[in-house]
Length: 140
Image (cartoon, one colour):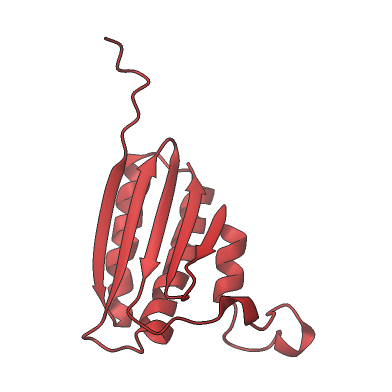
């Protein structure tokens, strides 16, 4: 029987405590997956930027740096694409009513670009209704 076109998926899961240093664990996982699946440098850079942004948002804004709360990160690799989900235990937010970071009055703000960056660097960026989970798709 020919097994060459049988697709299998791979799953990875991380549970991060809500502190900034947790980002290192996520970066290590992204590097491990990138090496294993020979991901291009561009896609690797986009994943690193987007997932760091999502995880920091979850830690700081979602879980309010509460070490008792976790950020859960899942990665599913299937058919030359990877789907990441980043979930926090916070109240969520209204992602439809964010200030536009490219409008003149916001250009010099130090914050407020995370979701904008995620939407531009991922192939797809989908929030759940509550706004405490984001799904990020990348073609490999």
